[in-house]
Image (cartoon, rainbow, N blue to C red):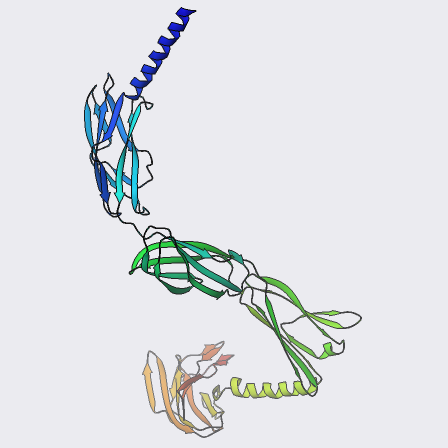
Length: 471
């Protein structure tokens, strides 16, 4: 029993000794003491690493909290050490942006790469003498709403150690930008720096960002973003404009989608069964008859912001309307479809008995206004030859080229409704069987006002056997 107790004590001591040896297998110490730095400065340290193991080992140095600030090793963070050997590893520490004034210690680990359970630690100590403005922004507003009014508050809390001043800000929402100022805020204080009631347009839908930016002395400090969700909203505006006449009734309905989603619906207008026989509507509705009344039904689909206009009219003057349409049609034809200046061409064998073809060209001013000048152009094609036997007007210019003859008349001015007949004769140099085509004549008309216009006559076709030998 006594031997067993002694053996247990010896084993316990040996285990305890092995633990102490394991903890001392590597050592790491900071050789630089406490550094005093500003939040924008860099703190330089020297870390000593010692290998107390009985074999060569690579020891890696790193921070426990690798997200706190930035730890830089200019010459690497791994020391390859023989048994009993030490090495100094330079370290540069950059404080995090949101660090506050105060004293801090950053734990540093030295870890064996052979056995990661073998490790040691030390601390880099530093006093921060300044800080970035620690201004926490809260955007207080509803996160979801239908189009309408939205109240937005911007709240700023100084969570830093020192007071802040000369702070300005911007807030952007729905293509609008507003500014605000925060002249002074003590450490730990909270202030409402902005308040506004926005009107959310009815056609807005989906997610929209609210962005708040803070500046100090013109320099950017921070940004806060929230998302505003605008819910679907159906909003139809229906305006009617009825108008009563002596023997007629008309109604115009304008439907506008003021919401932010597409709307498909129908509009129903009741009328008596008699009125449908005198009805005109645009667009054409579906006419439904029932026992009580006749219904005019329009179906529509409107996107946000889109409108549709429905109109119908009941008139008991259909005959008068038909007469007005006839008169209006005649006026429109006279004004828009009647040819103002015409040139007509005719051709036939010369009635005088000569072996020739007589060409007649009728030029007419169909308008009720004078014409400043009219110029006529005509062509005698091959195999026809011009006989210089002209009627009332001789061409001003006769030009022969490429086997054809070009003739030009300057007819001068024309009075309203005036017409003139120009004629000449041609002969054929060959006997022609079949159909002879004589090309169109052209007139160029210069009105008293406005630009010159060109008009073309008809072509002339002579059918049958044409035998007019050349003399």
